[in-house]
Length: 276
Ligand SMILES: C[S@@+](CC[C@H](N)C(=O)[O-])C[C@H]1O[C@@H](n2cnc3c(N)ncnc32)[C@H](O)[C@@H]1O
Ligand SMILES: [Mg+2]
Image 1: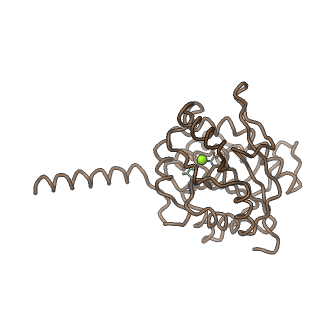
Image 2: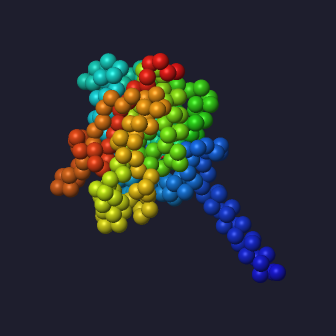
């Protein structure tokens, strides 16, 4: 009996410790996948370590920003050459992590809200943004897209970069992204294609050979093909108007935009005007 009681108290303590270590947006929503969130909570301290597990996002950042800047400036008729081309735009960065994308968006002049389901990520994002007056205006919240919808929030542009492959229900997630977007507003989503090449490079090479990412970061079966993403977005009321691939050059160690969408890709869509 004593033995059982001891075992129970050890288990309870472990659960308590884990709960303390990992807290996330309180409400249960269709997009939340606890296992996926736990993976990010475990490495939250490393968001701004440019040589750590988020190195691929840091290295990819200038390339994805070039795409975002270009599509948003074209859509919202902004001058891409001005110092603050995104000035006047309200942007939400859903699944913002430590703020790797939110910060440069704020530097380009946008009014940025960053949300993430993992509390630790938001704390780190807040601390980092406060180091610089141009990013300290970012609004960070530990919440989900679904809760923002319930609160009636609307944005000119909605970003969800490298998030959709970590949610439980991508179709519901896209409906929430659409609901957060103003009529004729913009949506940008990046993710990994469910292709054999992606299995070989984004999982086998990145996680097991090069060890860029912790093993188990990605589940191949959770990836969407570009065609599936276009369809899901269309059903949510978002018309995909542009798409690009990101390709990695091992010689230069840089990423660039490409027509090759067989592994990493980014899509830009606009919300159908009739849908509010
Ligand atoms: C690979 S990281 C991408 C971070 C950031 N978007 C970037 O590209 O720099 C995925 C992030 O999405 C968050 N996340 C996963 N599912 C989420 C959900 N349903 N709602 C909000 N955030 C979520 C994770 O906590 C993690 O910080
Ligand atoms: Mg990912």
